[in-house]
Length: 217
Image (tube, rainbow, N blue to C red):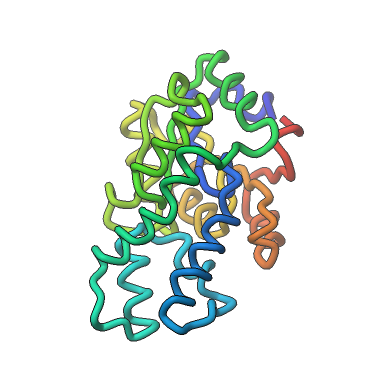
């Protein structure tokens, strides 16, 4: 890995499922949120909303479940209340994620985060896990017009880092993220996430490099 990125100057990390072991909390939020409204969580629901930003996910949820008496803003606020305590106080980084970020920072890399989660959640997790001194910029789906199936969020992150896409490596756990980053001509590293087992083979085939753990780096 070090040899592959010798000529690179920037690292762009996804947060949920890549650096942060957080997919379980979102599964619980989905169960509680939809259960309160009398629905079970469909098997494809989390995969459908994961690449989206919070507002797009809220719009999708309202349309899919016919929640016509609710607004995207009310859903987003409810999700925020359910998630903030976990992000600011309980969720931990994946094994060796901290050491990886610190190592790349010490090598002189510019580091950014590109996340579909709300900025407040990303910032809370970054601060809680001691990464704030290493992260130059945080970009969320709210900062761009399209979700992670497109290159927009990674292009905005590289722009804020002052780098060209060809100078950056993108770490992602979802296939939409890998595909979006590759459309932007970034070097991509797929990170295994058990919650995404159904698309693991796709990530392995389409990413430029695949790791099961940051220990491998």
